[in-house]
Amino acid sequence: MDKITHIFRYYVLPIYWAILTYMLLKPGVENKEYWFMFSGIDKILHISIFALLGFVFRIGFPRMRFFTFFLIMFIYGLGTEILQREMHLGRSMELLDLIADLLGVLMGYYTYQKIKKYYF
Image 1 (cartoon, rainbow, N blue to C red):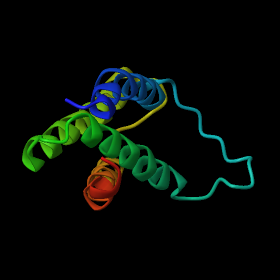
Image 2: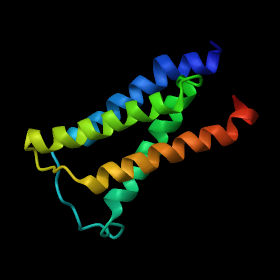
Image 3: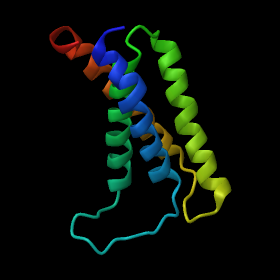
Image 4: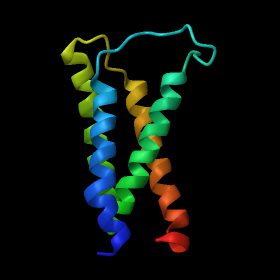
């Protein structure tokens, strides 16, 4: 295992995943008073944060098969959506959020695939 993979696998990924889990499960508050808030911004945020998760995960586990990678990301996305519904903290389970999560993961995966020969 090279140094970059080691750093991402044991430091960057766990820290990012913990922060992401906290962000997804903390009590939710609808806040539309800012100028940049618009309908659908949450889907853009889901795509973005999961694209970064997929990218970081791929750097940490570069030899993992696509199916295994996608299954882990799917289970995580579905799990967070189910927990949002079950925890009753002002968040809800939404199929479109899960779809946005998976689109983001795929974007992160393919971004890694495109730049790995240059950097990793």
